Image (cartoon, rainbow, N blue to C red):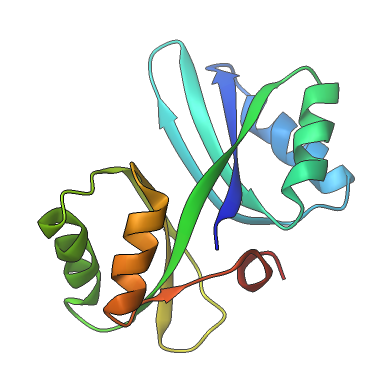
Length: 142
């Protein structure tokens, strides 16, 4: 029910994200989604890839500080207000969203959103109950 996200701590230096992307690409691993949050000294790069365990190994071999995190991938109908509806369900049930980002869906009429929440089980159950599609690793990685 959850998917694995790579979280990479990156120094704010020119070319570091390019180095990460190159290492992953050279290993034949495809990036599905990406998000970057930065500060003056470092950034946090979050990646969804088609083979997270192999990508983690490749990056560790290149001496990047990387970890795997369980996140939810949610299919949101591509209609006005649908995303707000999903977030309101979580808010009404006191489930905090730590961060989120979206990526392109290959499924017509649906956007894919990655959510990092305080309680994956509760969030997945509530969203599924209200008709939202909780994506499997196979849905995202393929």
